Length: 102
Length: 162
Image (cartoon, rainbow over all chains, first blue to last red; front, side, top):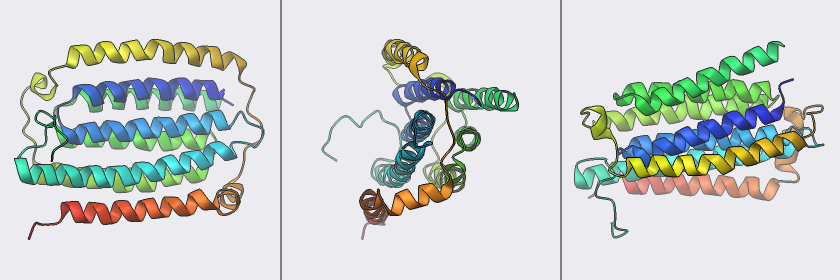
């Protein structure tokens, strides 16, 4: 059995890679892709830390289920907003999104 | 032993495909690297005995999310220039910020790893099912409301203006 801490270290590394991508890429679509990667690595952290608990990872799995559900809702809303922005402005980069005015 | 080989194999695939997703110029290729990365995450969940979550990850992310992402890439046909044009103006500061976050994160993780107990017997999928409709029934039902709200919101936002 691989120690759960190894999974958590891997999840942290992938989270940092995704964070770098989220902050540096100009495209809204790629920012959303990085968010999905971050959500997956958080779910992996929950599952890994859950395995060290006396309930055999049940709490971790329940939390990871909710992370996956929220991730699905978030990508649906996010892509709808990207489509709306593209229709209004003709591009999908983050350059001009610096106001909350719509 | 087999577990260790599988873990390091999958860890290599996940890190390599995440980096490839970040550095590829072509958007569709980027989505395909994301698909590889998320699919390998499912393998990692299975290695931690979370078989139901591994399947959920494959169906939802690999099956659903990447297809929707490819559709949005095709509908918005983003312009692709050289690699520098894909980056934000504040890239140097952002990189510094990520490095600044990574130091305390990895440090606290290393200190936590020394105190973690070894993993015991794993919970099964039927345990998870009982917990989701028993102890965690209220948040489970709320999450279906969240999904419904997201669905209605997405349709409302993305509809053609009349």
